[in-house]
Amino acid sequence: MAPTQVALLGSGIAYSASPAMQNAAFSALGLTWRYSILDLAPEQLADAVDALRQAEWAGANVTIPYKVAVMEHLDRIEAEAEEAGAVNTVFKQGSSLVGRNTDVLGLRQGMKSLGHDPELAGSGLKVLVLGGGGGARAVAVALRAAQLTWVLRGRRSGFEPPGEYLSWSQPNWWERARAADLLVNATPLGRAPGSGEELVRALPEHGGVIDLVYAAGGTPLVRAGRSGGSPVYDGWELLLAQGAAAFESWTGLKAPLQVMRQALEI
Image 1 (cartoon, rainbow, N blue to C red):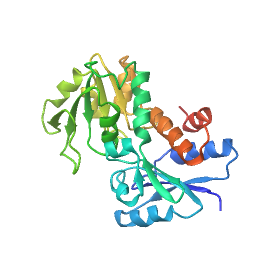
Image 2: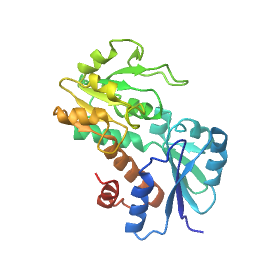
Image 3: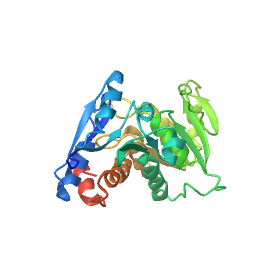
Image 4: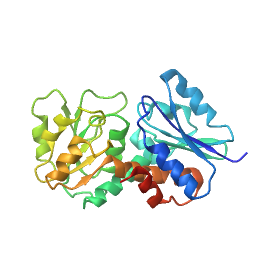
């Protein structure tokens, strides 16, 4: 049986734009595949991953809160995903399930679009990162040559952020963000109405913004950056970049980027 199914594994993910993007891509290339959402409780994750071994499945995307937990259920983890300690794409090689982190690729593209080389050591680029989950772990790999400062609510198990660590409860952490060359939001703040406005005060005075979150019209942080003339790479662009890489992982075909972009209306 040829593969026909791909899914997004996560929890509380009804908002996801990935089905529209990926289904448009499948259709454009004449693939009778279907991308669906599997909203899972933690105890359902292992069975859902095991189901991917069936012939009709090509793989999956993985999102919050399972980018780390999914790793123990896979046969092999690619080097950058292992380094990040997080997987957002599962694909098949023969009978094996392989974990990949396409967020890393998307973040590198974002850095380059903002005029920075994320792998240029010694550049002195000062980056402040908000968050410590799966997205932040991808940041740690993609931006490892930069001077990284982390603002975390608490250290995540198994994740020792490279560079300096600040607590979210410190009243003046946002002042450090104001002086950064780049602010990266890897928290969920900004997705729900009314959330994320407090991040606007951390907008760098002379730097850029990468926001891993996508929201209709842009998150408060993205909107503030654009209105102030800051260079911005938002969650829609990251969704497109990582989604295209995932599409190519499953199908072996070049992703129809323009079709996917139109599906996202960006």
